[in-house]
Image (cartoon, rainbow, N blue to C red; front, side, top):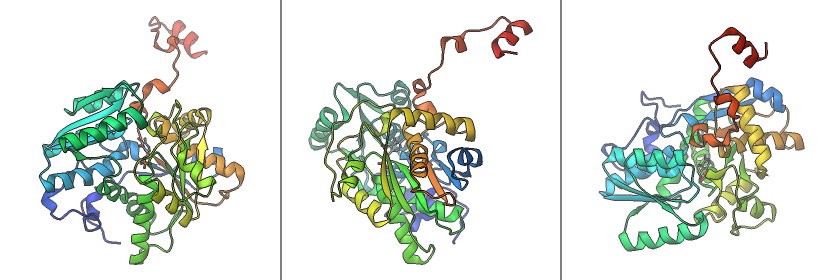
Length: 362
Ligand SMILES: Cc1ncc(COP(=O)(O)O)c(C=O)c1O
């Protein structure tokens, strides 16, 4: 496999629809660690469990893979204003890449979005509009109207250049596993761009003869917002929107993926994968074991991949010897309030050994 000194996704420049290298807007995204999580794997009965640690991307979520490409195209086109509606992670990512490109950014988020995500987008200089309404309805309606009215460059997942960036998952995994293909790749899923893009990326590698097959792809969703799981289980060729309920996995709380739900469904089926819905309890448990047994602090939405791996192993769908990659798509600090910490933990002790003994229970 061809290697270059650039370790960002841009070492795959030839695979992206960007004409000139001078258009590239990069913050060094990509080449995130693929970690063999031995302790965690042992706990859930999957010794060959790997974690793709995308919490380490420049703005702390997978969105940087797509926005690096999406905003590079915007720069190539001479765009003045880039916009996105978002549950928070895309907002921060678009804001950061737009800042680096010298493009104005406007991001819309639903009320109730984690303050840390709003702060992050604002810090990069975005105009952050918090909308009194839910993501799938009021925010989506306002956003669509605004695009029409103002002609902003649309950075939503329906922007095809964004999926292109997420193909880098496939390229990186193939590189990191020396061309070996995992049996399963599990991806926390909202609109389904990650699933579709990985499938597309692997198919490209297959046609080049760099890999021998495509892994089975698994979409992991919160059961409070699982239109892809529902459509997959019912054998539908497209998703039917659902009303998303509150969930701890707020980054993937999307009931009506306006973009490419049908393509994700096709990718799941063609890869012989599946789709799994997780309860908040399962998601929080996964978040805790990922942190405690592998040392990675992932946000709840990201932890759905490991929760799904555990569930599929318990069902026997994933075999004990299977090689499984779970994508960890967002940093835990994106939504710190998800971690229940007692008041006591914040209360200082007097600086004596006795007080310390009492606190640590020794
Ligand atoms: C942390 C996190 N994981 C996963 C996703 C899923 O994105 P998609 O299904 O579009 O690949 C998102 C965004 O919606 C996200 O913020």
